[in-house]
Each structure stands twice: as structure tokens, then as C-alpha cells.
Image (cartoon, rainbow, N blue to C red):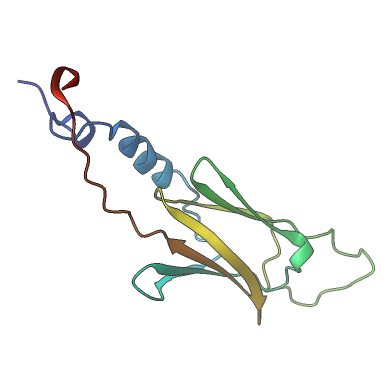
Amino acid sequence: MTKLTLATHPFLLGFEQLERMVEQAKKSGNDGYPPFNIEQVSESMYRITLAVAGFGDDELSITIENNKLLVRGRQAPVDEARVFLHRGIAGRQFQKSFVLADGVEVTGAITQNGLLHIDLKRAEPDAVVQTVKINGK
């Protein structure tokens, strides 16, 4: 007996990449740093918020590659003359990735009070009805 997975089900054509996307999401940095929230702002709007205390705007980058949102942070080296008696604010580099569905686009990003807010919008699908002619008729 053959085991059917989501991508191999005979009624779901063209969903082969869905399993690859799920695998990518599982591998996308589960170390918990930096902490983040994902909230639904409206029916078609989302916001990802990352805690990036200590990072300046020039030390953060946001890119989109193959429906994957990549957020990277890299701080400049600490001045050797500074002496810390206690250092509790993490300043290590990070990379956080989020898999975006087709039709989801990034509309903007801002930093505010040590938080990086990334706004996303899902495009409304167009209702399309298509008639297919049989034998060119």
C-alpha cells in the first residue's frame, strides 16, 4: 500500500513545493533569538515584530529571496576600551527567516523602542472563471 502525503494526493496538483516550504520553515532557526511576535492586524494585513535592542537601523537588513523573508542583524564590534561590569543585552548576530505564501508582500518596516516591525499584506485573489474548450471548439 502506498502512503499518500499532502503533496502526492491525486486531487492536489501543483502543491509539491508545499512540503518543501514546510521543511524550510522547520529549519528556519529555532534558537529563539531574537524573540518575535506575529500578529494579524486586519483580514489581509500582518505584522512581524522582532526584539532587536541594541541594533541600529544600519545593522539590520531585510531581504526577500524565493518567497522567504530573511531578517539579519550584525552589530559593529564593541569598543575594546569599554569595560562592562555586567553584560545582559545580547548583541550577537542573527538570521531569522519566515516563509511567505504566494501573494504576500512586505509593505514596510520601522524600528521603534528597540523593536523592528515588518508589515505584510496578502493580496486579495481575483475571482477568475475560465472555460476550457474541448478539441478547440
